[in-house]
Length: 169
Image 1 (cartoon, one colour):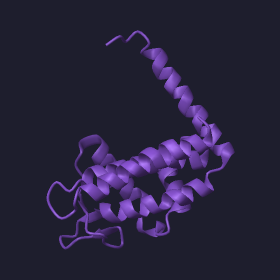
Image 2: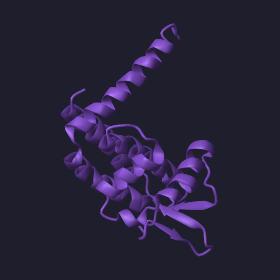
Image 3: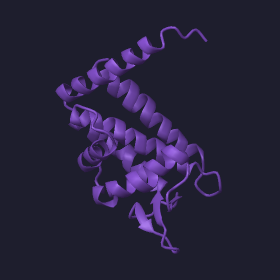
């Protein structure tokens, strides 16, 4: 996949379009406001896209740190260790937070202490910051780094396809 196709089809066509729909169609003013799913997708997307900025896949901390420091205007609002421990590990492993909370109230800073002293991530602020950051990502993505990271991705895909080539479900 060429870099321009990746940007148009994946970054703008899938990632951005999905997030905008998730954010705009499901209202944040009631229970079931999609705050967990929204935050989990964004944290996963930052990990994925950060690898393209690095030209490799160095896993969560390095990938997300690179993405946030390069693309977010409010990068200081997103401490990597909190995103990783409380939100990413809690979401991805258990679909529950490890001692934190999620809101959708458009608060700043994006990660804050609530009235009960729980570390809280505002998914609405994160979504808005991430959607805005995609243009920066597109402008900062170097072709050579993109190609290196895509080569890794394609190798993993080929390995998966070969491993399960006998699946005929």
